[in-house]
Length: 351
Length: 164
Image (cartoon, rainbow over all chains, first blue to last red; front, side, top):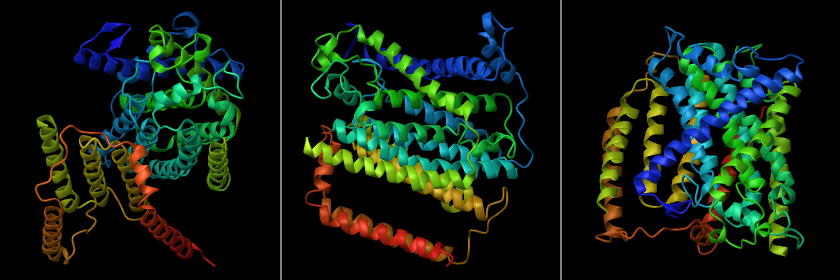
């Protein structure tokens, strides 16, 4: 695993490349998602044009927005707990960067090849709750506190179905290593035909649906946007934030959407791989080197498809009420995913 | 093994400072946040021991669930910014000898059971599979017993929270 594109890179070079790659893997999807979905697709669905002035079709709008946020005054409320107030957005963004570290992008193009990859992803994604609670509390504003508490309640409730939905995939693949899960999907076969490999979206469809709903809730996107409900809580825990601290929250929101979509595509859509039978590959070692270049593009494409789904639902449905939201998690999603685990385990032993 | 020792020393120092801040700070939310630093340090130490699974479990359970619940509870009930929460009561002097006795007992137990035994320095990785084989093999009965304790706690919580 010392060569990328058959070029030997020293260890410090690899580490540097991974850090830079991590920045690209977080910021590039975030920017693309904001422009393509938030600016353009949302406008299209609402019968308007969206930004058109900055650059061709408004494609430079995002840079203008970032410039605007960076030069705004950094306001901190008088009564705020200043140190925690400043720390909170960084913790939210940190959770995103930790999350991308386990996503594999090719046979050798990975940041860390963690043995317990999926488990790690679920664990570090829960750190963002801490940042949100800190932001809500330290703002010294009752709307912020309410938003923070709602966010915490929601994120705790929807983390469970997410973990349980992933469990089905782990049982089927027999490993928690994301690289091995990719291998199991692309080298596998379904009902004896290996033309499409065995993407788990087919065999774990229930798990996929539960996972995507849980992702929607974890991202606090509508219809699960009770914590940041702008009409009653004025953006909840983000109310008091301005300037670049708000920008960090904003980047965090869409970068996390991108990274969660990457993890979902790795778990359910075959990740960076193409079905190995197309090129006659049999194992990880026989995969051609050009997959290190094609892999990231494939992951990116699958991510865009999944984020499209997330955004489509976000722009289409009205908000859940708080009690509906909690009841949906505890009384619908968790029993379904528990049943999914049982069925998967029984079938795994039977076949 | 030297690099690990330096890493251990740095993390341990941070943990000790954070642990002292947990008990000396007068704001209950600050105390909880310092506790997060301590628990994250524990996870980092597990990573140094090449115990990935335990480290990730530590983050998921303690930082992702227990501490969030702590903060949720304190923020919901009794924490205003900049207010001295009156955490130090007259029993705090009693706590110091109790902590000393506990520390001595644990050090004694560790020294007694391991003595001069050392971890293999080749850093052989314990895989998740080995852990699960152990839990669902020889340690199945303790695992079940623990599950019953948790179940009892859950039922107790429901009984306490029910109005009728």
